[in-house]
Length: 323
Ligand code: PBG
Image 1 (cartoon, rainbow, N blue to C red):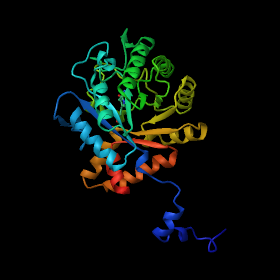
Image 2: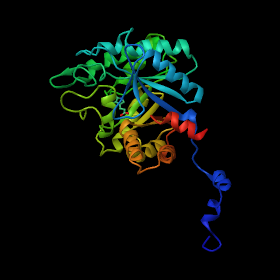
Image 3: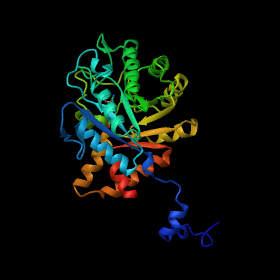
Image 4: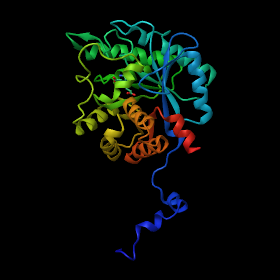
């Protein structure tokens, strides 16, 4: 197999051949677009740190979702930004809350678009943490009840999949039980199983107005230094009934995606988070990076590492590029 008999460049010599031997494919059906929904009408409030993304009122959200559907994107994931926040995240599980109203409108007007809802409390609490605060920290078990109620209210509104991102222990089991008890036995849970306490969520917290008002999330989200722990988290969530799992962020955690692919046979999602999006946009806006090629290379890398689908703010552009 040595040179000159063997020449690796032969299989790279034309796009016709390269296309034939390409190991990793991207398809629009694997992309999920995150969208932010807020109260009001006709509202399109641009997010400064995430160029091209905006908080959208329900009517604008439906228009945006319509575009996603006609492009053939896999689906959308919704984050709600409520009018008012309180200590008990009441807006999260209010049957008439912002996310629930948005899901109902989407399902009424675009019934065949896949709608995932993010289940968490940080957008709904006055302190910006992901659960009930007791003695200066998030109380795990008290928070489970909120999460279970939220999941049921999203399913009742018509959500296709619920996706807990809070990182409380036992949330998948609590949500599965509540969903089943309410008759939603067929609504799958996509668990953000390996979610790291990452600096790359910075722009999202501006977008969702969910930055913690004191401390940080390191007592519930994972330490970026750990990889074996990710597999333990995933195993636990699968045992509790998760149907699919997610690794988040994506590009700085490709090793975790790969290890997960080796170890588990469930569908794996990866979240190319806000900071990943904003870094690429900043590079492109400065003329330092070619935006379109960076989008496709970063998404290909995430797929190559082992993700089946990708939550990405580039879902629309990437779909256009593949078209
Ligand atoms: C809610 C949540 C966050 C993200 C998704 N769900 C923020 C956080 O954990 O602080 C981040 C997504 C992104 O950065 O794009 N807990």
